[in-house]
Structures are given as structure tokens and as C-alpha cells.
Image 1 (cartoon, rainbow, N blue to C red):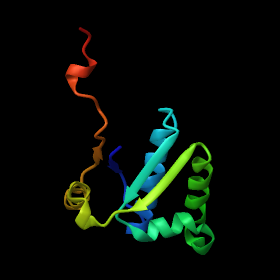
Image 2 (cartoon, rainbow, N blue to C red):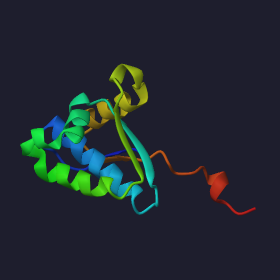
Image 3 (tube, rainbow, N blue to C red):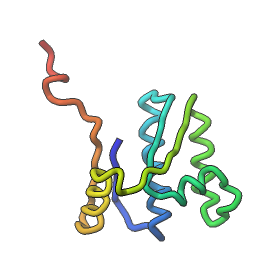
Image 4 (cartoon, one colour):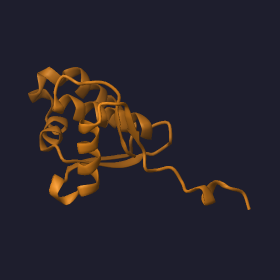
Length: 116
């Protein structure tokens, strides 16, 4: 489900973690119980798998841990930027254009929402 840029984060890693939290928050009310997230940030994958080693992110990681319990299946994997040009392009455009950017690619086409 997309990405969101609405404020500046302390670091790029903070932004990655906040984006994961936002994405997880989007899945829960939509009854998505089996989720797989992918990121180009290998540090975030390490962080989520070994939260005790990242005390500066303790509050974020506690929130991720609580939300993980809401899912029947949770997976976070690393995909290098070179293997995902669409996400890389979105991230690059978000950095270039300082205005608020919200992107969600799960909106159905109009022909799927109109009654027959």
C-alpha cells in the first residue's frame, strides 16, 4: 500500500521505520491479517528482527511489536533498490519535491467500483 511523506524525520532510518508503522496501521483496520512488507533498507530489517540492539528506536520498535501481534502472518524482507525501480522512483521524487506527497496504489479502477 504506498508511502506517505508528511513531515521531516530525524534521519532516513527514522523515516523508514515511521513508514512501516504507517503501513501497518493501514492494514489493521482493513482486516489484512497476513502481510508481507518489503523495504530497500537492510538496517530496518535487522532492527525489527533484533529490537534490543537498537535502543534509540525503542518506542518505534515497541509499537511495531504490538502491531505485529495483530497479524496472523508478518514478514519484512529486504529488496535492493536496483531490484525495485518503481519504489526507488517514488522515493526519489518524494525527496526532490518538498510538498506533501501521499501515494497508495490499492485504489480500484473506476470500472470496478461502478454498479452494473
